[in-house]
Image (cartoon, rainbow, N blue to C red; front, top):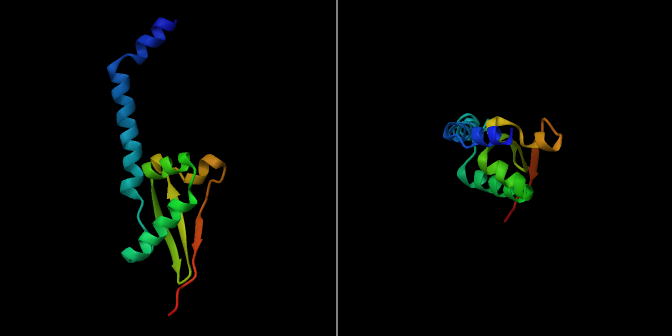
Length: 111
């Protein structure tokens, strides 16, 4: 039985199929996840830096690298973010939070 099992996974078609499915899974969030609120590039960069700071676990960072985040709402002092992984699965799904939204807040600097 072990020989039959190893023969299946040594087949190049299985390896190619796994690679194609992985590329499709990565392409889905990259192509379909878009911001719901338009923001300028400076604010977007600040929000993305905060997302990278919040998700400091290596598994979360890898999942976020393969997926994408989108900005749902923005106020003068906060932003609401949704993050997706491969096949557009919400990032919180793996930790048991199916509809996880991240709220990032900051204090405006006044001169």
